Image (cartoon, rainbow, N blue to C red; front, side, top):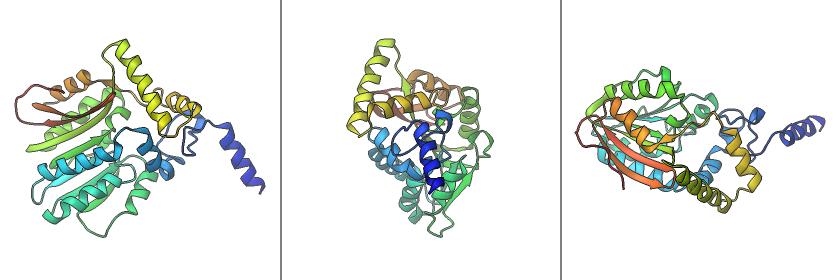
Length: 258
């Protein structure tokens, strides 16, 4: 009983960012108690989260060939990874979920159906050795990687992709002007209130992400992709500051949006 009271007091002393998540020292982490509450929390935090999962699975179905390979980079608890495998397994596509956090990989591994076509790997993207692949997915993942490491990761990934392959990249982005950023952030605040977060939780979550989440503008992300050698970039999703593209290692068209 005394231990429960002490645990309760520790949680009280730490800010709550929603769904019972109390980041240690007020700094957001994908470890600690986050994996247990992650699926509910993230689905309420990101607009069209489940619909974007649907979109990505449909896109993967168009891109991955028979006996191909697909990476889900930053797979967290493996929800999307498992759905990809369910769709792609009939044509023999191997799906590999990758995450740096051991708690996430532990929870993801509980979804394994006992097939060699789905597996989970614990590794930071900075250290991952990419095998040849037809598709890689970064679903709100790269934004948590240190800025100097993003270009090298994208370059190595582009080299690992087959010529017919693709990268699906979703990122939270900054507005291109101060007015755009203020407007978008205000609308996003209201979205989170409608999703059930109270004002204190929204403010504390934003504070906890300082220095952890480092978004760029859409044009800066497109420039990183071009510099890494991606030749064609197609815009597939936008909701205020949430942006999704497909990047191809061959093609020739300039980035386009809308």
